[in-house]
Image (cartoon, rainbow, N blue to C red; front, side, top):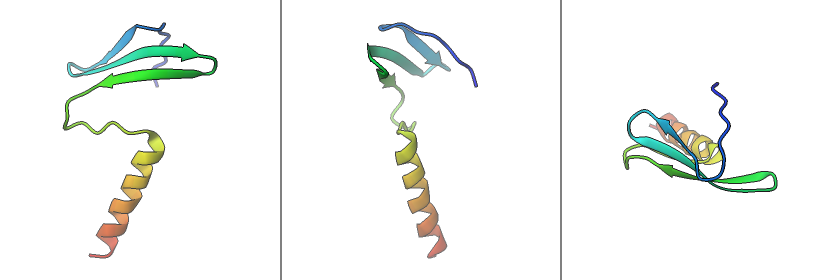
Length: 62
C-alpha cells in the first residue's frame, strides 16, 4: 500500500486516466473527487462488496 499526504485541493494521479482530488478536510472526514473513465467502476468498498456478492449469487443460480 502506498501512503501519501495531500492537502485540500491537491490531486493524486493513478495511471493516465484517473485523478483523485482532496476537496475538503473537515475534522476526521475528507471529501474526495474522483475523475475516471466511464468504463472504470468507482464505488465505496461496501458497495463494491455488495455488488460482487449479488453477482456471485446470480452466477450460483445458473
